[in-house]
Length: 308
Ligand code: AMP
Image (tube, rainbow, N blue to C red; front, side):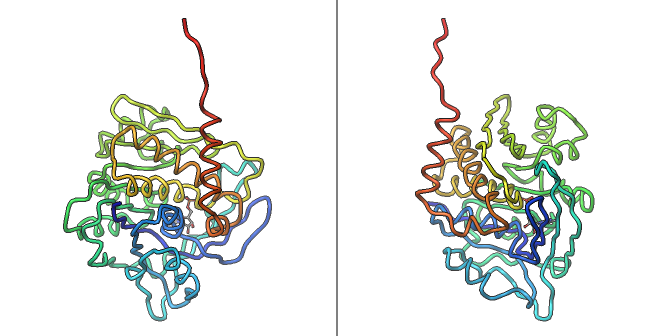
């Protein structure tokens, strides 16, 4: 089993969906990634920053999942990163209403000593210079570096984003962001262009339409599980990334064939995440539920056809 380093926001989120509205609740890219990866009982550590307004019980929740939180800096008198978003009726698109960087604005990440030899690094969504700094602190070359990002950083720190994209193995990105990054409408062309920027593997997430994994001329497609009700898609992308990286860390196999399974795990975990507001569903999720849904996934995509 490999060690996993996760960097990303640990945050307060306020969410509006057609089903309701929340005040500030626990959120953040690293939070969702950590909760997803904790399904694999790994040695995992989160590197992030919060303010002194961040409830201790949220940090305790992460450590109770066997997540090392010694790399989460608590800034005295600082305010925690805050994001607010509103979903459209189709739940596939959303508007960001507020992004307050707060303590993230001058964050210098420190990777805990015990994790500087981690084999898998998950660079979750936050400033690309912070992602780069985490990579620079690794004392041995990781077997796999996965990066997730979003339009906010393309709009505000594109040059820095390109610097980090050059150094990674896998990028997970949603369809609109892949188009924004490359200026290409076709996702096949966009994936090729992103591969030319650095990562050999490109995962394009398409919300309720599943995810595509590209490597050279190979493509693998995993649908999203058709769900009766999607309550809140916040964190689904991060949960996918956490499931993907967690599975690779668990299996210690970075082949394209194994990455297909990682995509399936990521999609399965993301399908739970959207069932309740914020982190609620991921917190209550049990291993046997995951197992059952993986079987449903298999049934959904397997067929026997006789070709003559
Ligand atoms: P997702 O729905 O997977 O795209 O991720 C939503 C999570 O990302 C929320 O919990 C937010 O706190 C967090 N988030 C939103 N905007 C940013 C940003 N610009 N940088 C880092 N994390 C963000």
